[in-house]
Length: 101
Image (cartoon, rainbow, N blue to C red; front, side):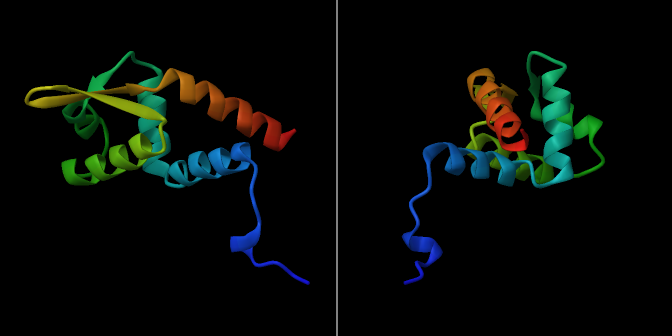
C-alpha cells in the first residue's frame, strides 16, 4: 500500500534542511546572507542601499530569512538591526554538507 507524502514521517534534520533550502530559494536572500556574513550586523536601510530593490521587498526577504531562523533582528527604534543567527547558520552548513556528501 502506497503512503501519501502527508503520511511519511520525516527526520527532524530533513525538515530543517528543507526549511533552510526554501529560505535560500531566492537570489536576493542569498545576497542578503552574503552581505550579513561579511559584517557583524546591519540595519534594513543599509541593505536597501546595497540592493537594487525597494525597502518593502527587502523587508519581505528579511522576514523569510528570519522565519527560517537564519537571521535574527534586534529592534533599535526606529530601526531593526539584523545579523546572522550563528547557531542556525552552522547547523544549516552542516546539514547542506551532509546532504551533498
